[in-house]
Length: 109
Length: 109
DNA sequence: ATATTTACTACGTCAGACATACCACGACAC
DNA sequence: GTGTCGTGGTATGTCTGACGTAGTAAATAT
Image (cartoon, rainbow over all chains, first blue to last red):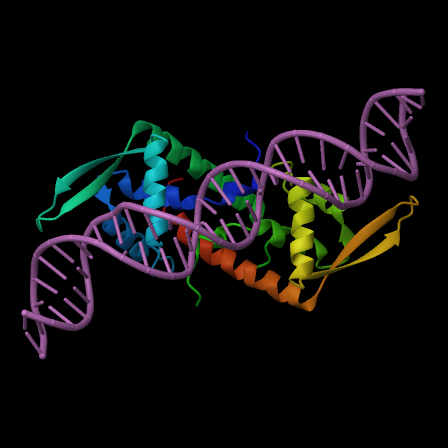
């Protein structure tokens, strides 16, 4: 079992984005909308945060991108999750469980 | 309801420390040990992280400090939570509940 | 005597999140 | 024909919490 580092708890944007890419490729604007909807408007990801997450994750090999002309005639950058991305996502899910258990002990409801 | 910022999810060291100060003042080494114990060795806070949290929180008015000679004859800096600290702690607890609910939606167990 | 535990302090670095700003295109109202 | 809203981004720079590395010093155990 890996010990928790404090920054464990940071960086779940990547995890949220990867979750939305598990079943099909998607692009910035759509991901942004879906995060907002899924969270019932509780979390609205910033554009800069989103696109820098895309860049970081592509660099790390967790996603790959391709350009495509959408129905509306506009060019869009689509992102799809890689195998390494799926593995990373699963690890983050496990890490989240652990982190949650720990933080819970210091929280009074 | 305040919307969640991404960094909401960071900075729970402060919350953990404040939790341990709710009932009585304490000092660095003890806090460190208690975090370790309470988390079943899953989280071991770094000394630099701990003491910089103390400094930050004192600056923010969430804790105050006093020096005292301990039983073992050594001088120790004790920290105690302030009213502002208690308020902050409660806010962080609420925030944690919210954050947890949101992140959960993007996690597959 | 020396190693370990206790109890810190100093300094520098890194990465993720964010603020601010800008660009380009289409649709649709006015 | 112009304005503005929604779409779909890019560029640049700053901030902060966490962390790596190192050092100090007294007390206690061996």
